[in-house]
Image 1 (cartoon, one colour):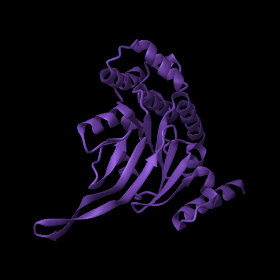
Image 2 (cartoon, rainbow, N blue to C red):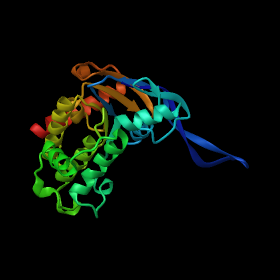
Image 3 (tube, helix red, strand yellow):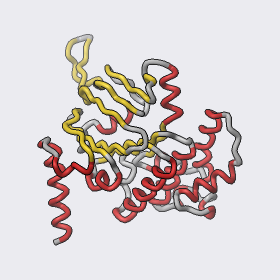
Image 4 (cartoon, one colour):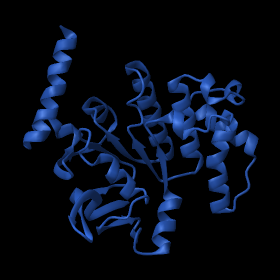
Length: 264
């Protein structure tokens, strides 16, 4: 469904090479991977590994220096049709739910943003009030939340609203960019359970960007390890204990060590 081929990305550096030329810092090196329809791919790496840059490239926000992105066979950066196909297929749930939700909007208005995108794109007319109530129920909230503002919600509740807004667009693919990292451990599990239920219900495809290996093993089918802008290994989550790459093994061992200390 989604395919990245040989993606290179660099950013302009402040360092001056000559009077008329500045240097560039490369942050992604020949990144290639595929995401199958109905699956969840985890992109795992530490801060500065290139995870967020990869997310921007695959959701159409950052054109790479070289390489291609395909959505359902359409070249995203190669044609207007490709860009339109991506816009119609993808939704994004961000890490910082507080800044991604307009503080002056009530919950019903936040979800309406997603519905408006869908109706404009599809031409379908919906019973907006009923659709918003249904979407809210899908993420485990009732209609008493409709008139609340973001500051009146807990972090977990607000992220549920952001997820409702994302599925309101009727996407095929959802990019989850550190979507649970700002939540406490108990709420993280609740949100991951919700995401799993929605994935099964709507046959969604996920790209789950995170630095948390535990979350990867909880929700993802496959994982790729990203280190200093390069993919060091990709494997099925079921085979994660058998990784050979030194960086992947280091990350895995650090999680296991942490879990053992927690038990003690």
